[in-house]
Image (spheres, rainbow, N blue to C red):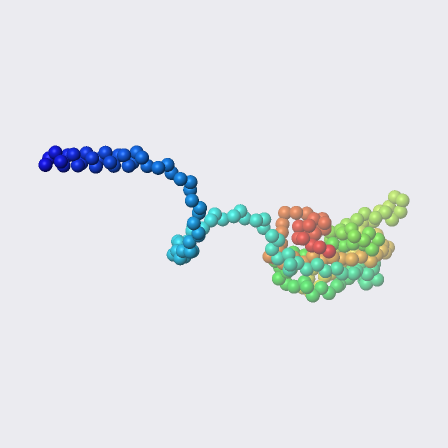
Length: 196
């Protein structure tokens, strides 16, 4: 019986090897089958980590919208006095908080020199003759609701100043910027973004 079990086992191994050795060559790949139905949406994933903060932008000019620019016409006929002339002009925008903690800058432009702005106080040496000169000063004092103008010349006789425009730039505390030449109107215009 031993013989027949050995013989049967050997025949089975030979038959198996012959089937494997005689397998046919692989054929060509068949066509792609149709797309199956869409699967169900999976569960919501965990939130991702926050990204890094971006670079800070350039600081804007805080309070520029609250800057008030007012042009006042100063007429020579309104001045009182001779050697020292004075005038008072009402300016309701000049409030106590502005005068105490903000900034007010004044610039004047003469009728004969329109577009050129000079910082106040204004000082000029004027020739009154071929070899004589006079010193002309125009100053302003700011008060609540008004300004006081003074025009002084060192000559005893009347030295006309002519009409001019006085431009007031009223800057609240929140918008005050320092570190530039506030006597240069073009620089003030650029720093505060005034578009006049």
